[in-house]
Length: 320
Image 1: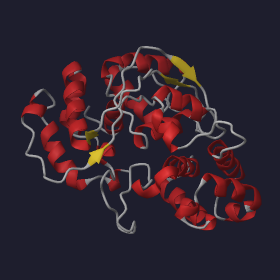
Image 2: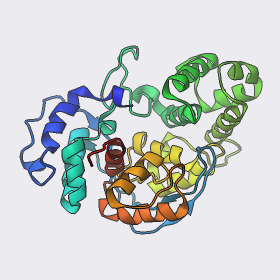
Image 3: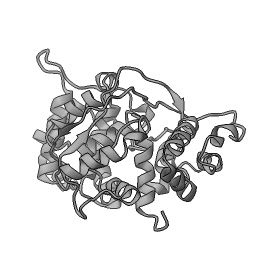
């Protein structure tokens, strides 16, 4: 993901966050006339803690999802969100202040937001790989992509995803109704494109949840965007093949929730463990460790998504 960072935004933001204190807000460089905007959902949270399980992520684990959001939503531009979040985290935690000084701005927050990549015909491509032009099917396409990418290295996953999309008839054909039909009538072709039998079943189950049926409620972009983080998590994690880690990444990068703590992510867990001394096993994050991770980062609210991105930097930094 780092290779897709927004170079245009990274330089001024890095300069602004170096002080990692209240000076971040006071000494901000003059903003450019053209601003990239990112819908960041900032939600009021309580300290409820619930263990929620789900299938499809590897290794399988139970994940604590602790935010209990209201329906409030605030739209901030990307740079402003980073500045406010960095200033807050630096203020409440001296250790995070040191992280910011040594690691700088988390590049994963800036990845692809507002950036036009070669080969996208001028479309804006977001951090989850979806396009701003995806319209009503953006959430579905992002989740399909997540399923394809599960347990695969980036290059291999991208190759298979490209083949699957082509087999389905191109980007615009990746719709719930078309995918549901294809999973039952074109199984051999999709398998030949690189999908495993299990992932084929997962994608079919996902499409089922997005296709209207007999007046029953179904998922779509509008309903998912109207939900708080907890409600969206509960809805999605029940779908076969959609596990906690997949949902947390979806909440952070597709729906833009600002206060998500993906404690099932081993790299994030290792970063928190390194920073606060929380015991974490090498290959999986058990329920006890997850609870400790949540407690150790309570003071990050309401910027736990940003804090988590910083942990991706911490995990690979020997000096922090």
